Image (cartoon, rainbow, N blue to C red; front, side):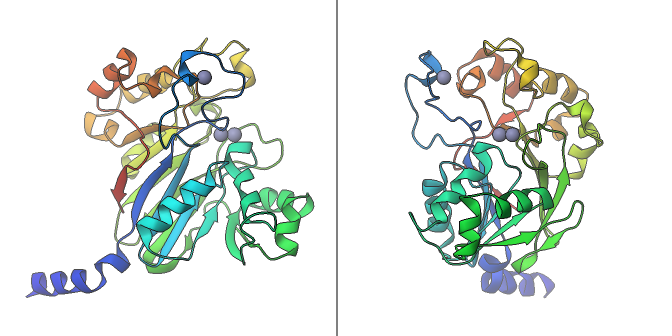
Length: 294
Ligand SMILES: [Zn+2]
Ligand SMILES: [Zn+2]
Ligand SMILES: [Zn+2]
């Protein structure tokens, strides 16, 4: 009987109460083709190759994690999958790949009405005090909703979003990652940018077992990848992360998806031997359009 009730409940409410997480972009802020890059990495652009972005949707809501420079096709994609006309945005930080897409909500473009944008205090302050972002507020194209570290924000249909601070180059705002969870459902971890795992107060090795999927910073594959001092743009190299994750059991490693890949990252190519070796160990590379049930 209980089983029957569950089935009826699912058929009645399943589409409303179950959210889907979708990968809407996988690249570092500068995207690809990357300005002034004449190397093979940017010679043959792929379809739907957008800046790092996750979406969560059901038939009544659509949530974007970050407003990237590619927000136009990314928002179009999630609204098509959802069928909903309502959407909101959670921001991680004030680097160009993560918030400048907000410009499309303004009067010169979509001229939206009161799109809910969620952000941390410094990020909110930055948007509220600087043009052109403060005009989005003045014209009510967006509304700003404050987040607090470690405080879960309940959205509709049991969707819960919880921000946490991560160490990053915080010139204009703090930087957060998110736990994306559904009440009674699964938990996804999103950390597109972090300087180095050692600088985070949490131990990533202890965090992975507490989540079901982990989308984490895979900006560079290894040291020496770009011709500039890589300490200026610190990220955990995929090679370093993979070494760390080798201490996890395989079933834990299988939760991990590298995202936010720099144009130069050889791991963007599915045929790259270094990537194939990591995939053989259970690790994954996020791909546009991949879906996960929360
Ligand atoms: Zn970034
Ligand atoms: Zn390139
Ligand atoms: Zn950043």
